Amino acid sequence: MEVAALKLKLKEQIIEYLNLMDLKPEDITDEEPLFGPNLGLDSIDSIELIVLLEREYGLKIKNPADGRKILVDVNHIADYIIENTKV
Image (cartoon, rainbow, N blue to C red; front, side):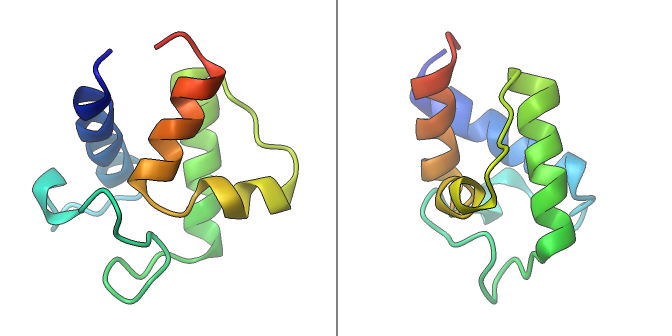
């Protein structure tokens, strides 16, 4: 899968998994912090993102410190998926 297509799919999945139905994929930039003031995600949302990665990509994040490094923005999540799967 092409990187741009993966990032678009990720944005769609983030909206779906976190029930952010008032957002469209184009409302989320690739480098926008997921846990900043714009999206306003919280620790419960981080758990949902971990579930998303496990269900959709077969990736498990076991160490919370790793999660903080991976779940920064769409770019970081896409890089993690590319490095750890055959997408």
